[in-house]
Image (cartoon, rainbow, N blue to C red; front, side, top):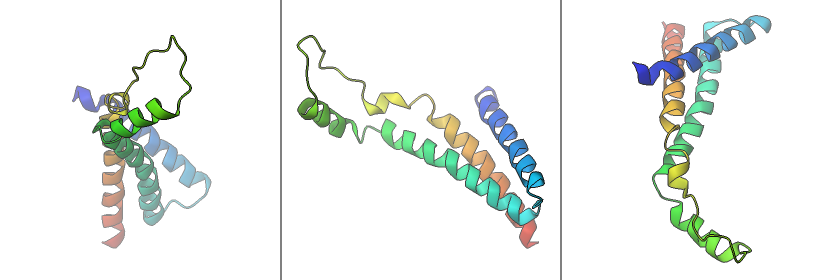
Length: 115
């Protein structure tokens, strides 16, 4: 449960923001709730999936090639670099879990719309 603490807080804050947005624009219907939750969940899922793909190591060779051939080197500059696979490893689950929670809320509200 400790792992889901921050994604749940983020999803709750996003949900409150979505409801306030829909109340301000006077379009608080089940369909608009489902659509808005889906769009917001896509934001989180796209970032999470991009971090997941980068952490798989797929782009590390491309990054190394670009660093070796297209940078202006200084004499004192080390040749080491931080690979893409190390950049987003720690936060990819946060983005995917937050997006997954919002997507589940969107699907549930869509089911209520069709019932």
